[in-house]
Length: 307
View 1 (cartoon, helix red, strand yellow):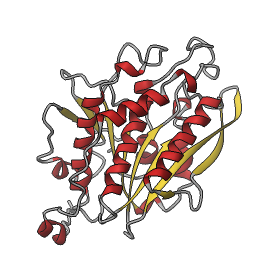
View 2 (view 1 turned 90 degrees about the vertical axis):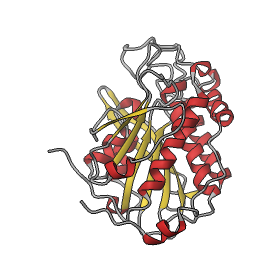
View 3 (view 1 turned 60 degrees about the vertical axis):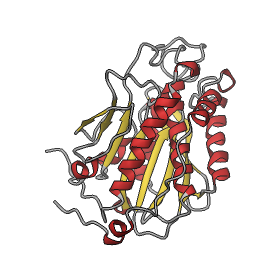
View 4 (view 1 turned 180 degrees about the vertical axis):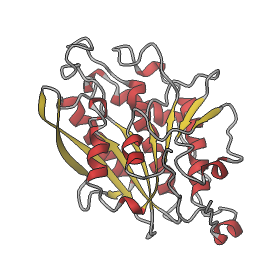
């Protein structure tokens, strides 16, 4: 095991990290309400609502003070085919916080949902709006909160941050697949990737699941002492899974995956904003912050693939 602690961080007691800012349940609610409103009609790929959602994320990134993350552009456009559907268009939204560091932490969530279900070959009721409040407006809300958190710190961390809102996830992880094949910077420079997908329906009996525990040698040490009152979590070693972290893991990048579990509204028109538990989501983000900060005590995580 290679766990190299940055001596300066220990001496400083991590005082350089953002401490005054707290993730906001009110802002989470606001973000989820907008993204899962009927106005965006389920944020479907190749539907106007999906394009509006990506534009919303870009404007939030810009307002927060991030730099365009795809060189001088906010968007990473791509096309893909799936089954009988060809030349489908989507785009990732990428914001960057440059701290002048050699390595970068990627934080991601997918902004798309099923839309009006026209691309799913009858698996879901076509024409009905699938608002996707938990899946994955909740994850995008978390993405924006974490971006705000680390921007508030004034760029004092020993890692750069890249915040990515992925397109086309519901159609086969298309945005993250494209990014890992066409990265803005070498994936060898990525410390780890943290993915948030469906973090809005916290169940106190289950807790929040955190996958990827086995994807780096150092995760067990990093997790020690992490806790937040009112939020319990459990870990899963698997780096693979049905969301965008999978693309990074198979490309050799350590990952973490936050997920509050399935529910009866999954991929149904009833996944609506009032059912998202914003206060609990804010607590989940507090746990994410602790893990990110602990991981920044390590020079570079050592990827651990499945045996």
